[in-house]
Every structure is written in structure tokens, then in C-alpha cells.
Image (tube, rainbow, N blue to C red; front, side):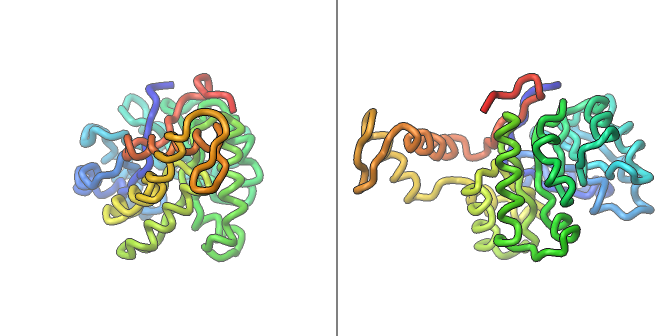
Length: 279
């Protein structure tokens, strides 16, 4: 189903603003999502679809289509054919015949955006659906559906379920939802670090100024780097590092942290269902 993708910071750009496409690609994100859904008014959908292209970037270009059951969905999916898009992001993904048919017919891998209570309940089955390459969390829509606050405590169970569903299906770690703050660097870094610590592999960005803080949040800090190097220098078998017992599972974590340092722009690999690793 195409070459593997790798991204940690995918950046949304409205598909009806083609003058922003190249700017988005130059903002430092490692993927660009052309958005046909929430960012585009109903009377601009046709123009946005006509503006779709993927030749402006060296990073993967994805398209978020309008959801199943909307008047624009079929035309959005048809517009993907014959284009060099890396994946299609499907909003409000839920198990059903229509979603399964979409995944089977999609010309590119599918990123399933979990945005509803039903979608979360279906997450493990969605992750196992053929051609679903990755899960993503539409946290704001999810909160609107449940009537809950957009806060860490309220969303902890949902986030943890998406991480677990992805792992059980052998998918890459999921992509976390957006931080609405644009200029609060500390908040953006902290949200990204929270997502990383829960097991997410990336976080959606809605503005170029969010790209660097998100990347910093997913990268190991100086204390983590020092800890990881001590752990890996402790040899094999059980050992004590700074008064704490260390063995192979801890060394696996240390290698993963240093791996992020070596390749800060690389997210987890996204593969087709036939190429998934087993948990």
C-alpha cells in the first residue's frame, strides 16, 4: 500500500488556501495535511478540492477528507486518485460497512481520526481494519461529543486506549490531538511531552508556530539523555544506576530515547496492514 511514512509533527493547512501550501512545507513539519473538512467553509469545498496537489513538498502530503455521510465525501475521495498523496485522514472514524468499504477502496493508506464515543469504543477494531495505517485523536471533537472538558484528566482514558489499540494491532503509535494555544510555547511543549509519555508517536499542529515546540516536546531533554547514557553504559543483566535497578526492559526505553535524539524528525513508521509488526 505504498512506501512507509514517518512523521511526528503533521501540520494542517486549509486546502482552499494554496498560497499557504509551500509555507506549510517550509515550516519544519515532517508532514502536511491539506484539510478539506473543518478549515473549509461549505461554499469553498469545491475550490479546495480543485486546489489539491502534492508537488509542493518533499515531506509527505496527506489529505483530510470530509466524513462519511457528508455531501462532499465521495467527491473528496475521488479527488485522491492518481495523485501523489501519502495518506488520507478520515474524520469521525467508526466501525461499519461504509468505513470498511472506504478503507478497501482508498488509493492510499488510511489514518483513522477518532473523534466520537463510538469511535473510541471501536478503536481496537478500527486499528485492525485493512489499510488503516495509523490512529489519530480528534480530541476537541471528542470532547464536544461527550460534553467533557478538553483537559488531561478527562482525556486520559481515551488517550491510553488509542495507544493500547495501536499496539495491539501492530500499528505505529497514534497521533495526539491539537493544542489550541498558538503562542504559548511552554504549554505546547508540555502537551507534546505529555502525549509522548503516554506512548503517542506524534501530535497534530494547526499553526507553523507550533511545529518547533511540538518537536521539542517529543525529543528527550538533557536529563533524559544523561540517564539513558548511564543506563546503556551499565552493561548487561541487572545493574544499579543512581540507586535504581536496571535490566533489559529499562535499556529498551533508554535506546528509544536516544533514538529520538539521533533522528528528531522521525516519527514511528506507518505501514500497510500486511506489513504490520506483531506486538
